[in-house]
Image (cartoon, rainbow, N blue to C red):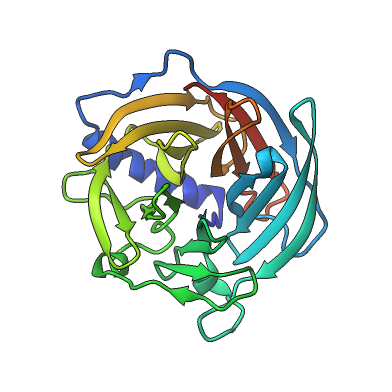
Length: 303
């Protein structure tokens, strides 16, 4: 999400906190027996006009490659160097401005790209906020193939809509809004099965946190990154579920940070290292502001 000013975002989140608090379900998430363990942070700096505003990422190659998306419709591929398992440097290989279905470079509200999922064939799926939609790109320079838009997408609020995108092992896409609760006060989740959209389940909001990204891990479970802005800085939270035919089960709280622990974490990728250890890599959106930074944060996750 683009933050035009800290004041506007603080007011918006405060309002969302009130709504979410009223919608909290009686059942609380279970804390994992072993919570996420902090591994390290890396501040990425690069003098390029497109650099910044990162809202989603995908880690591959056992932690040595990264595809990252900015909220100004730029898709970047990188190589990651590691030292003793920790990020030591990042080198950008290519950066492409995303195109519309007509072939024009996306700009302004039409280019507010927020979620990223990569299919088994390498296709990039991108969710957008300004005009709520999901588009497929065969590669970074391809024209968009926009998936059908259900009526529900057209009713979502600007700058608070399709913030997340994830793909499961069957190639089905999942997306949910940052702040647009259903009539029961729950977070609606939509799924694309390759032919049509459905709404298979909802997720419970908890406190003032809002969804900012999601991913399916190598373990097949659904991970949700959430954010809250306080007067003392950003808080981050990571929850996960088992997704069954009956819906999400085993809600587990893996991580919840205090204000200012990290920057504005907005992108999430869950991946496994060579030893099978699950990792969560998160990236911050600096809003193209000098007072913020592009921070990559990594945690080891319990099974």
